[in-house]
Amino acid sequence: MKKVAFYTLGCKLNFSETSTIGRLFTDAGYTVVDFTDGADVYVINTCSVTEHADKKCRKVVKEALKYAPHAYVTIVGCYAQLKPTEIAEIEGVDMVLGAAEKFRIVEYISDLTKNPKAVIHQQDIEKVNHNFIAAYSIGDRTRTFLKVQDGCDYPCTYCTIPLARGGSRSDTIENVLNRARQIAESGVKEIVLTGVNLGDFGIREGQREDKFFDLVRALEEVEGIDRFRISSIEPNLLSNEIISFVANSKKFVPHFHIPLQSGSDKILGLMKRRYRRDLYTERVAAIKKQMPDCCIGVDVIVGFPGETQEDFLETYEFLNGLDVSYLHVFTYSEREQTEAAAMQGSVTGSTRADRNKMLHILSEKKRRAFYAAQVGKTGEVLFEDDQKSGYMHGFTRNYVKVKAKYDPVMVNEVKTVKLVGLAADGEMEVMELETVYSHS
Image 1 (cartoon, rainbow, N blue to C red):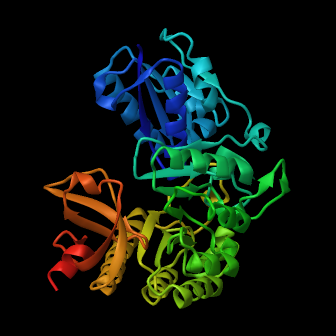
Image 2 (image 1 turned 180 degrees about the horizontal axis):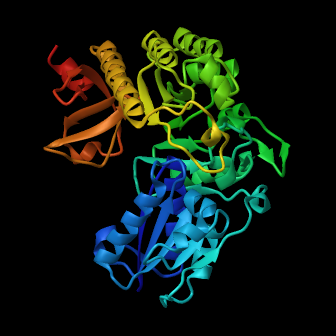
């Protein structure tokens, strides 16, 4: 049997698609192996958001050929859609597949003969705008990333995603429910809903047929899944009805990841974001009013063109005063074919790095404060299949990472625990509630 190995750059959506592509190879008789095992075929799933996409892609190709010098190397993903010719020139690359073509990869790889010049199969993104292709990750017994939406209609000035993935489009609610039931049958306890613009779920063939809230409400009735987690949702699409539903849900967990990008209304305007900081403040307040222990994550970009020191400090102070739990900090980097690339007021690299560092420190402060506020409380932890220095890990419903003495019986089990304190590594140490009661 021929062997295939994968490497994924970027978001959870990419991971769900890589897993789906992996099943296509398995169905075709391939064996999926680790990257270092010397595969016959290497598939590298790329990202256009990731900084230095070209450099990272070249490095992974080089590493693949180190383990298997004669392997057939195929590049897929967002970067492959945006820069197919550029990627085809990378030494060792045999094939480049665009956004739609990557799901027909087995058809294209009928012959593993390496040719002097890479083959490109890629069409204009406009031609795949109405074509939703479902995907979900498999292999992790604990959780699955389920893709329910793709593409984006928001023209943010810094983003290439609409160019790489096309316009917003979604699966049907019926299809999503059927896949959730299939996933439940595999023993997975948690499903993470993913998409490019998840809150925009419901568009098919260019027409809105459903709302994200309709999907959330329907998934609540799926049996066999203990938890649903919303991966990321735009603040202007996070409605009060969604917040209230999650607050009273038995399955949707109290954890939101809400992109902010900047705490300066001026910069939000330059970015063409569809909200201002007042709306963001309202959303956080509404969540915390109904779910005081809810975990809230924030995306933020530093060093956007025109961002002065005053603008950055406005963002810093805004985040510092906001009741959020952690930050994902991105340093702005220029992207071809975006409006921002031609904007005036470029921020120096060293200044971008300094601002990134400041927000990373703030993020750790926020996370530790959130964790500290949970000490002494009880929570339900879904334990994962890992072991490090005699400990296993898991997450509470509100996304507190915990550690406990390894016990194989607890893998993929939900346990009610007492959160007893922060460990030296910053994780939360726990004690099984039954143990606490037996000693009281």
